[in-house]
Length: 183
Image (cartoon, rainbow, N blue to C red; front, side, top):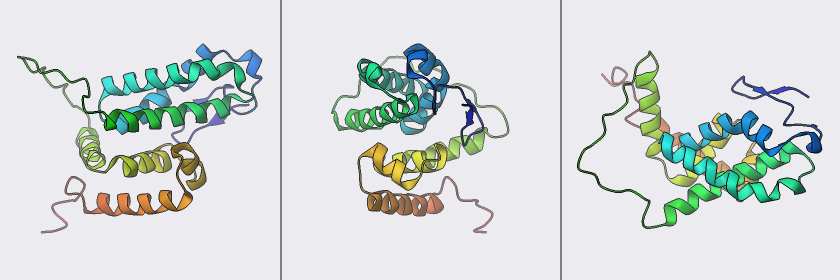
């Protein structure tokens, strides 16, 4: 079965009805790795930490691969591991950062959407962890409120209230406010 995600990308036969015996863990990662990385990048705001987060979530989920009946169910399992791992990383005191004598040069941002992307990441970065996770799952991953609640392990009411607060904060965010509107 071929499906298309909300972002318009093709989701191979790794999801929805594929024969689990015919799907390997490697083909699952090849098919869904980019989407998992994108979610992780939106959560962390950093490409390197996003790669580490995806790798950690996949490493946690890999031992359970043999127990799945449906590969799309395994993706939900990996996503939950992704979000819970991100939350646990923020509970730690030390986040693996090491000071250096020289700062690396920032990557050049080019293209018409570079400023918008930067502003959006700044606004998302200002949200609390839970609100950011709800926004990513609901509006980027296009999950329903129930699916979002299941992935995060919270109630449906929590998803609704966190999303309402997050959207209100994003509407007020100076990073997303057009200065010409207030002139």
